[in-house]
Image 1: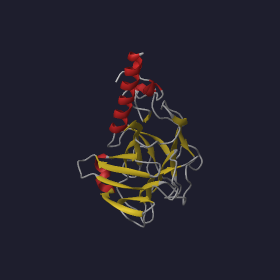
Image 2 (image 1 turned 180 degrees about the horizontal axis):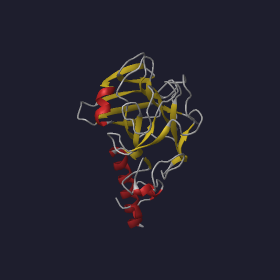
Image 3 (image 1 turned 120 degrees about the horizontal axis):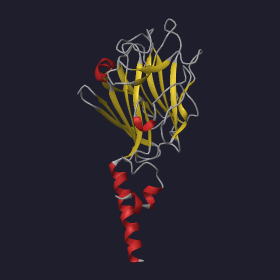
Image 4 (image 1 turned 135 degrees about the vertical axis):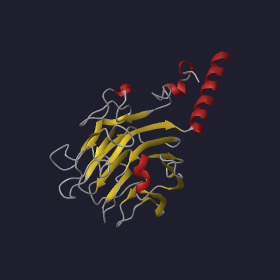
Length: 264
């Protein structure tokens, strides 16, 4: 599929460079110096970088880490005797569209603490959700009265993935979210230590979209700092790409445009 011949792909910047239409990496030479305090080189993601509305002083709960099992990563850390919500989010320019895959790689803390934990919220934004506000189109979390298993909340309520946080802590986990329509989705969670992935399909809710924001949050045990993978919640990257069927349709559209051009 040649971009020079495709009006369809020309309307979606980034598709022809590895099919990425949006990306944020903790560290990648393509995107400058990677994530830092309030800025990075992500493409087609709103704002200037990870939006941090954690408690003052700014930056206390967020930093770069070089010791995570998933490599250099943006880390959320809880301090001050288990108080304070580490909270970082990113707007998705134009929203997550049906047929596109949002992918992120994370690594969660090892221990569990009663009525504490961490989550990933997919919301309509426009900002991070404060502590206690779990309203989202979709929520992936380990945050339920001492539970150590990742759960998924959607319009049908909460379902357990069967993936334990200790399993994820070993080598991280990749989460892939695909909207199958404006109100439905497919989600796959893949532990990167080789454990069995989990997939489910469902209906978004109670905030049923559009998904224009992703919010990572941590309320956990006291961290000793950025280089504390035992207690921190770490994010390696997030990308948005067309799923293969969408990419195939783009290719068919491109072929049709080329055929019509040649007939003329």
